[in-house]
Every structure is written in structure tokens, then in C-alpha cells.
Length: 126
Image 1: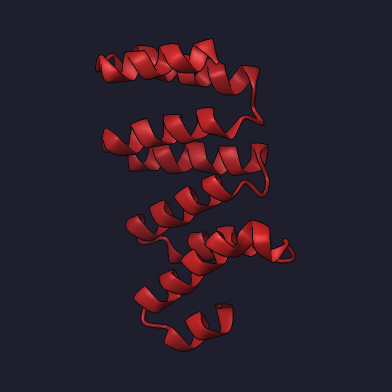
Image 2 (image 1 turned 90 degrees about the vertical axis):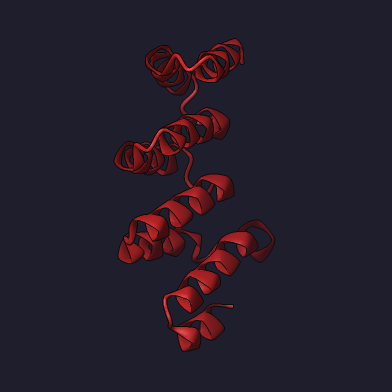
């Protein structure tokens, strides 16, 4: 928790290299803690490093399988970057999950398909 706070402080002070090192350490020490991954990815996205953000989220989804927040962030980023197949692949990870756990991700999937002009698919998804 302390490392996460230090990383956040470095980010707010615009010391991005220090923040990156601290976020890496946070995720090394606690790979199953989704908050460190989310904050790290958010920082990279805000600084325009979309490819790095995507790499982080890919690693995060492997470390925290089924985490709704990471999946949502990953799907939205993939759509933003125009990687719809990769977004659909992330959405496929929700298959078989309990509805109360994965409904937000399913809804985002339906909205993604709708925005992509595939209303029929969107209706079947949700």
C-alpha cells in the first residue's frame, strides 16, 4: 500500500520515471492486486503511451484473471486503439462467469459491438 501511495505521489509530481519504477515494484510485490495495475496503466494512457498501457493491461489480465475493472479498462483501450479483435478476445474471458460478476463487461461488449455497427451482435450479447 505504501509503495502504491509513493508511486501515485511521484505521478502527481510529474516524476514519471520514478512512478514507473514504483508501479513495477508494486506489481512485482503484489501481482494479484488489481489497483496497482490499473493506476500504472492509467498513468501510461494519460501520458500518451497507449502501447505501453496495452502491454501493462495484458499482463494485468493474466495476473488477475476475471477482474472486472481490468477487463473493462482493457476493452475500452483496445477499442480506442482500433483493436476490436483484441477487445473481443478480452470479452471472451467473461464467458461462463456469473452474471452478477460480469454484467458490466458484457454490457461494455454490447456497446462496443453497437458502436462498431454490429447491432445484431450487440443484441445477442446483451
